[in-house]
Image (tube, rainbow over all chains, first blue to last red; front, side, top):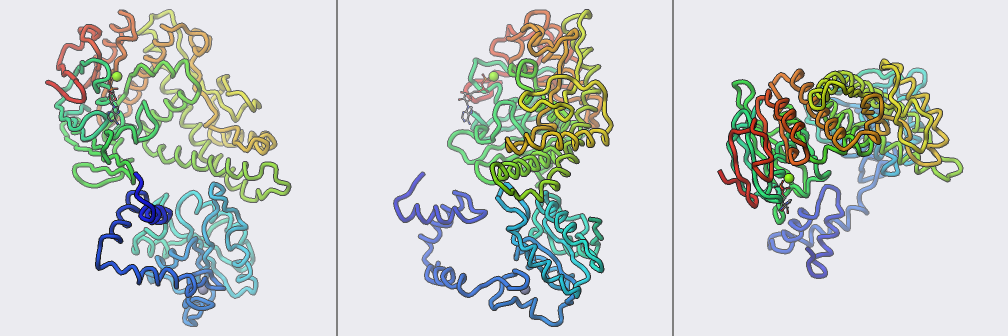
Amino acid sequence: MAYEGIVQELIDELGRLPGIGPKSAQRIAFHILQTESFDTTRLAQILMEVRDKVHFCAICGNVAEQETCSICRDPRRAQNVICVVEEAKDVAAIERTREFRGLYHVLGGALSPIDGIGPNDLRFAQLMKRLADGSVDEVIIATDPNLEGEATATYLSRLLVQPGLTVTRLASGLPVGGDLEYADEVTLGRAFEGRRVVEA
Amino acid sequence: MIVAHLGLTDFRNYAAADLELAGGPNVFVGRNGQGKTNLVEALGYLSTLGSHRVSTDQALIRTGSDAAIVRARLEHGGRDVLIELQINRSGANRAQVNRVATKPRELPRYITTVLFAPEDLVLVRGEPSARRRFLDELLVQTAPRFAGVIADYERVLKQRNSLLKSARGVRNPELSTLELWDERLVELGAEIIDARADLTQRLAPEVAAAYTRIAGDEHRAELGNALSILSDAVDEEVSDPASARLERPAIAEAFRAALVRLRRAELERGLTLAGPHRDDLVLMLNGLPARGYASHGESWSFALALRLASAAVLRLDSPLGDPIIILDDVFAELDETRRGQLAAAVGEYEQVLVTAAVVSDVPPEFAGRMVRIEAGAVLE
Ligand SMILES: Nc1ncnc2c1ncn2[C@@H]1O[C@H](COP(=O)(O)OP(=O)(O)O)[C@@H](O)[C@H]1O
Ligand SMILES: [Mg+2]
Ligand SMILES: [Zn+2]
């Protein structure tokens, strides 16, 4: 079913967002149109500013409002442990557990030929650079517990074979086939505590 | 087990239907196109999370509705279980067991059906894909965790095929991750090949027995697994059954060797050429492949034997009692003797659901509860 001109354009644009199907797009569009208290100016403003204001941390790839993120700038964080995740939203999920006090590295996704994502499309090289000076002695691989996340973890563990570096993987117990960001805090926290050394 | 009550909302041509069912035979009669198959398809869907007629859910939802609901109360021994599934036009399906939300993939643990349908002739005469589907569906019914293994295998296959395709015609293709996908393909694929061989071994004597029961003692029905990992053929489907049963490590080893052997061809075609997705369940009748040699009547006997054997295997396996037997419009396809033999063979099961266009097609053994179906309505 198609609406006239601009209404349909709005529905189409909303429908392009991840996780929003045609039905939800329609519902959101009509909510915006019909709810008087809904502040369209504010949403438009934020959308315009967010790309300018928010950057990705030059060190770890997390979202940041400056050149580097608040975690990389925090001297109280353990500098010798790096937790590798797929997306910036996984950093937020792990931070909520309060189990982890080290640094992060955001890969920007997982290996997935279907989506055209190969090793050169992920931030592997940047990670290797961070490890070059030997100050890091543990890398925790916290990619999603699904096929692509596991493949990425295996690839990474083989890349990371170097003297003095321990590579660990979160303990199983995370819902298989799922997304890290949807795991509840307790489960995720436990997975951290029970992490295991991986044999490459 | 028996299904004691079936409720449908906006499923196929049913706006709303409620139906009490009894143990033993239940016969649904109605002219063609009234909704008999739709009714039993709903139960089949709960048990396999798929339809025997369509590959997507959309067609199951009544035209003009957003969601269909299938509700069944089952009795296992003395215990009652209420399972419900909401099939949504957009968004994920939702399930409940005894009113508690659960994952749809949990439902098949509570209901097991064996459905005989006119389409079953493709099991014998159709492409290998029909027989792979038959075997895999039964595998999942006997060991539900294989739903995950098969889904993972298919996902790895898709990833690997994408990678192979992306390397096609490229001078220095990025293939450093191929090894990773190969390892997963072999690991999951070997597990599936092994499980299928195991299941085939359990089915074989049941198929032989069911075939002679239907068609007479002088016939010999046998099963074999044709394995693409043991073949050099690149373009044709495999059709020769493996001569010996391989242990899991040997399967994995043969699989790895096949990938090495086929590497060039795979890169040229951008396709994975060996693995359980290219295998076949070979049906042999009196020493000859049934596909291509068996007559129409013999093919029907073999198809019935496969379903009867499935029921027998599930019966031995299930902690919940007999599978529910569903005979959808099959009597019209069979001659008098086969009708009688089939009726006798399924008569021993706890519950049998039979559909037919005319009452005279139904063998007298099934005289029992009869329900009329008309234009998406159940008339008692
Ligand atoms: N999604 C649907 N919505 C409405 N009607 C449907 C839907 N799917 C199938 N039908 C109708 O159901 C009827 C077929 O029912 P079926 O159970 O196959 O008949 P039979 O009694 O011959 O087994 C057809 O009239 C078809 O149009
Ligand atoms: Mg029918
Ligand atoms: Zn950072």
